[in-house]
Length: 377
Image (cartoon, rainbow, N blue to C red; front, side, top):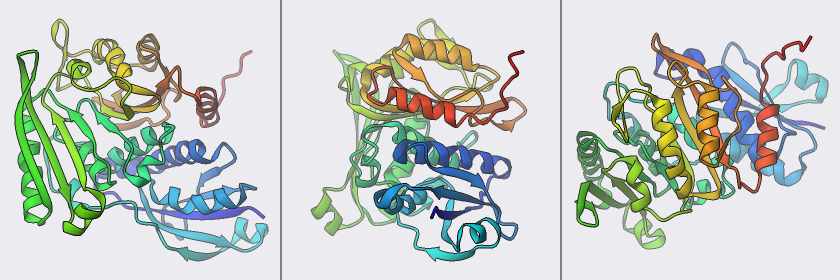
């Protein structure tokens, strides 16, 4: 008999994101579960009593897959509750009973680490979690999302939304940000947060330089919830490099990153630094930085990029990534949703062309493309 679980979707405080959350979480679930368990997992929206929910079915997945399923579902960006659908196949299809399941804890720190800091243009926390989940799922080292060993990089870190999510997951992330004000603001926020919540921690700021050239400020953070955690696990580490993302190859080892997450400049309000100076074209920036990012990635790494479709189209992004040795595996509009009048956002999923699971993940991308197919005639 097919095992089916129901995922209650958490509400979002962001009105615009709430209206798009259903299709986004559905797409996230198909990618995350497909990457972990294969293409046999079926996911669909199934509201219960008017409450948004997803139904996940695992026909013949075996005991290992059935055991892993609740833990995987708990990592989704909007999981609020889990239920098993009880009954025979006919009852499950019509009027099943719901058996509550414990939601395994995946986050080590309180949610205010992500929510306290407010500023114009801040990325929604659920969307940030979605990006991290997707990049990690594509990595051959995706198990590191559970034990804290996944090496995550945000090469355009802003004020640290992705870094904070990574910390809550127990990771030790690396970020880069060219804007000195953003680096200083994030350092001040994290220092205050760790102090007021009585963490065992150190926050050190130093000059960041390469061969005598000063690039900016380097922030190194060590933290643990208490002495016991610090003694037993060694705690977590965070590194924020105050520099142009193009210089990361001079600061980080090649083939050292498992997952890369970036919110690319949208080319509307904020510009981007390119070799010729300040540029508002995200495509120009991507063409320049993608080869540098590729050098930092392990062959089995995963990449998730948030983009504005108004200023970076799918075909152009695909060409830029391919030229850098990265294969775009998500279809055009896979995570499309409107942010405001000037931002029509999507997520690009990519892996190195040398990825050991390239064919499998490419096939998964085709399987998750639910758009109506055009009649060739």
